[in-house]
Image 1 (tube, rainbow over the protein chains, first blue to last red):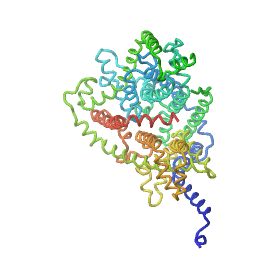
Image 2: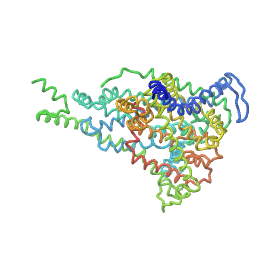
Image 3: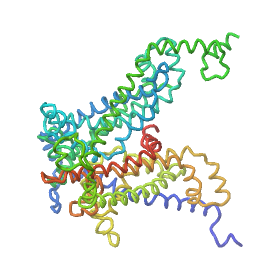
Image 4: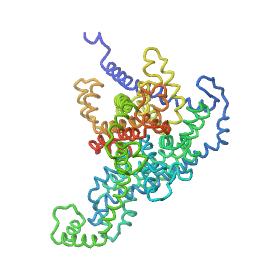
Length: 313
Length: 319
């Protein structure tokens, strides 16, 4: 009697299950398609148009934008800066972070296997820049690096009768100032990351190495680094992506948004400038496509090159 | 006998340590300390140098925020004659820092809540239900991790502009609206959230959920009342990750909230604007106060939750 009014049991269960799956996925997938997938798909198309100005109607020009990009000196300057950052940001950040993480975990007086006293305090302080917005850090260092006596660094120099350093106004120095600020903000994160990795290395490994007469440096290069290699690799990829995506530091901190004289400009800044200041939407999208291929190439290369024999412990 | 001795020395954590081994162990430690001792002091010097590098610029900003304009330009390191808290008042009122901060709170609150709700729903279904297209949808989400956002900026601007002409809700989600920004934040936070949480949901045991199904609980009830509470550690980590990521976002609001809608701007935009748009007649004392106001809440929140924040931000890298 009850079976006639409703669909059969298993069917109803399957229907409820399907309705649940569809119901839970509908909204996230819809939002994602509208705001993420469709813009990315359109970007490749816009890159092949001569679209300029908010209301103008674009015409298809094929690879013309890319041909023009080849001769665009400013863009290649930007690419060069991203390349330099891609090389230096991971190397410096990881080297400094490994150094501090090793000191925190094995720099104590307890014979090389204990951390220094107060290692928790240092970790808390070091990590703090990571929670600040990049735009805030940019404004902060803009003030710290001011060229006159109001600058945190130049104030004392001038007071001592020395010439002020144009950290952001000297085209030969500005890029290095950018790099220094990026490293300043990033190091703490990797200290914490590597510390967590080092803490999971069994203490016996260090003790065994010590009994064999290993010094601190040997312990670092023969024990810590090989066992930490997976984590270092992940850090390398994160920092590489970050180096390709640098924007806010350059846009907010430097004169002329990437100056002086294009000495600090990066790809993201050129994309934003061309799209939203010059309204060259087609041309800016072409730059975006180039950045996309650089990112993919980096990711593939990083995964290929850094894969090593994993050490289980 | 000999075998027992070997295990005893090798197993340092063992409880049955004999007096003799302990003695020789401490002697060895003493020798090591003599060899490595000074390094501990040097460790502290190196660590202290970086501590100074991190702390001093921030303290210096706080100091400048209570100085007069003349004191700021007179000498970078002079102490203020009096604490000029009126700088903070001007930053809050005239430079609209109060307004920007409120906007940031609103956008991040809705953005993170929406991200966590939609992200955990999608991640749960993708992690624990087998159906056609599961893998494709999962890969669609995860592929978003690889794209640089700068590629999407131009089309995204026009997508949001077009959303503004959708009937009924259009005025709430178009350009220059906080609603539009919230939806974009949610969409761009989904790839990592889905990636992380679906890995997390996969590791949870299924026995409790199965028992609940047997008792007649619906699918969504099992999700909200059983699986979601079980996934709490992962949810907390990724919530912190999203709050900080959305709070610190600068590029997307810069594109979507134009200069004509300054009353909708978020904090990062506001602070950056004071410093970039300001000419020579700028209120520098108020800029330092504004900067301090942006840093202070992060400092407080970080001090209270630093353990969870460190875990939340590094969670993605360790997975």
